[in-house]
Image (cartoon, rainbow, N blue to C red):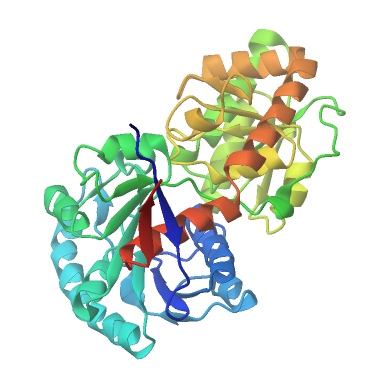
Amino acid sequence: MLIKKTINYKLFRREMKVLFIENAGHKTAGAFRSLVSLAIMLKKHGVEAHVALPKTADGVSLLEENHIPFIQLQSCAYSRMMLAEPSLIEQIKMPVKDLILKFSARKIAKYLKDNQIDIVHDNTSVSYIGMYAAKYAKVKHVWHIREFMEEDFNRRFWRRTAYLQLMNKSDAIVAVSQAVYDKYKDEIDNNKFSLIYNGIDIEKFLNTDREIFKSNPISVLCVGRISPGKGQELLIRAAGRLKTEYDKSITLNLAGSYQETQYNQILDLARSYGIEKYVNLLGQCDDMSEVYSRNDVFCMASKCEAFGRVTIEAMLAGCAALGSNSGGTAEILTTETGLTFCPNDEADLAKKLNYIIENQSLMKVKAKNGQEFAMKNFTSKKNAEEIYHLYCKLLDNCEEKTN
């Protein structure tokens, strides 16, 4: 006879308190935006979220706007992340930073005790000061893995084996996608390892009334700071092929921060294909919901995205979605919800762009399916509930009953 177990979560003895550790704090970064969204939603479960982040973080305004208490320590920025082929100087710096971080962790441990923090939650896999602080203060620790490292950032962990051993000492480890989970599942204790998708603020991005493909040429949006890993150059080369091989054009909008040299490189590349008048660099955009509403297609051109927060946002906004068939993007975009292309293949990307232009009615159906899929599976409410239940288990604040 099958015995089904259900878990009933009881009210916590007092307001639960969690300190998130953020190693960057950039207000446009997906990991930080996910943290802020989670902190806001956890309030509804009676959880008081605090945040520790570097002094250089520009996302402090988001914390202040949402009345989230925070502390700033520059050592929060120290990480075990280094280039795949690090320089000698970088290798020398790593053990020095490690010593400074362990010392600074005691400052955070004092904050934990002074504020009666119950759980420390490191927001990314490269941040680890929270692990030592939790150990010093003798509180529970959660580690969030939001990146692949080698595949998406061309980075690796310093002393990888030792670092994964440290990660396994955490009380719980969370992956943001099945792809991330699969990469680490053979190296992380599966009893502690779980998959919890990021959550998106649906009300902020949802647009059920808009109609796409009303302009000619159609507009394609790519979001992310200008960098090789984000695939903007790949998309421009594909747009160039679209013109030369299919005699079709698209308006290409690139939303994301850039340096002047990158700006010139992008325009020079577009100019070499004769499509510079169709390429717009929008820079950093604060109102992304408005940007999504002005585009027909969203393209996730990244080499290998761990999750793809902006893909979900664009789908909620009603955009037809196109993305690299890799990482977390492949879990979001199915034959029903969007379109995928072979990773780093400009010819296949051009082919798929041509397909979209020639099959606009079908892509409208896929866009609507994608919107419904995003609404059902990637809400901030669902994400917060799953994280809260994880916290309750760690604090033994639940009871199991057999039915």
